[in-house]
Length: 553
Figure 1 (cartoon, helix red, strand yellow):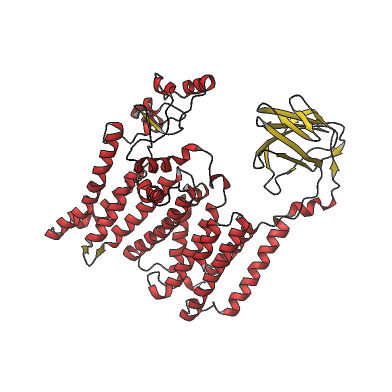
Figure 2: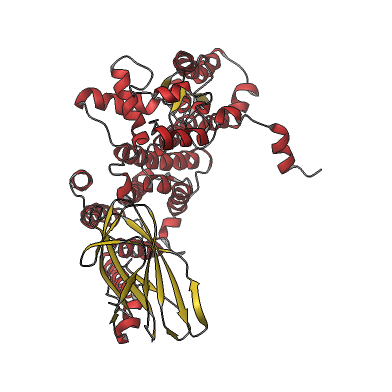
């Protein structure tokens, strides 16, 4: 039921609250199943049905109390307010009224609305605008006000407003006494059609229940109960497979639920409008045609530039001739290339394109790889405990796994499921899984050559995602230096060390050929040729400058 719900909510339901609610119900179902196993295995003597229900009700009570009285304190604070509508609005130069309260903007820039003779204390301001041509537009609003301490206008910090975000239209102020006038500064886009729905002060703030926040608080309270200092979870060894597996699986599924929620929180990346975020899909399409470069038209002006990597020169030409170029793609010998690692294309985008003929969403790829990374991260922590810290309790293991996953940056990547996140999260998956296999390869004073080979293959494939993660390969030195170089050598160790090294050779050869065919060098991934904010072909690496920054002479 859990996995079916995830698939349905992820691909069909566009409403984030329904998605969260559906996945939450499924998660509760799984928790209930494993709770039954909890009771049967008697992991914690205090975890009987009566105690669970007591704490469940207690947790719900605390959650609702915090949500209503703490996170909605502005609602109760504003109950005594008397809303005043400001209808006498002076539209300063630049806005053309086409209908009542509807204005046309011909040029992007700052526009001003002024309201005079207010003569009231202002607790909050309610400014409700919308772009009739783009309901998702986010407005930058800056207020300039007067009060009893300031006769002339003084500026307040800028804030953002979006019609689709509940509560963003109310902005709370802390002024001195009565206010006489307000100057509203708006940053508006060109060719926009804007409607002023309402401008008022001292509005009663509605009670707003945030389901995601409630779920988060509820889970935190439950975690405090399960991981309290006297919990029996600290008395059971993590490697006691039969007793701990229900707990570990429950933790993993809960983390999976959280990742699914996070990856769906940012609508910007559902179907991004940025063309360069489709580079992996464009490369898959080129591969299907037998090409290594992107099948994207290159401007003749760009080809004829003395230095196409000069950002300012490109900007000047763009204003004069409106040249088109692919942002953040490698431009070399008159062609566009992708400098990001090729492994994600070969394993996800190309198969999907060959089967369906369509582009694959980066969001879906990040979601799949992110969940697998969470699994491999937990497996890595478990492998370390099983190999070197066998007395570690299951309670400490789960806390360590939670700390590792939380501090790895995985949650941030899931919140931003774009092109740049794909190779990073893929490298995290390969590195954590590769290290886990290396650790588990050792048994009975010998190494499993299959685990060594697959582990090294994962670590080597990192070069085809985010090469910087290859630093993780050096962990093999402290892991097996003593085994290979301090203990007696035998014929088997020759095959074992070959199992470690051979995958790197197998991956390196095609990658080096791929680089050579594109950039005439087996070691050049093309990152320096990308059309970005600066000319990276001139950057280089200046050792002396770096040393001066870090060494005090």
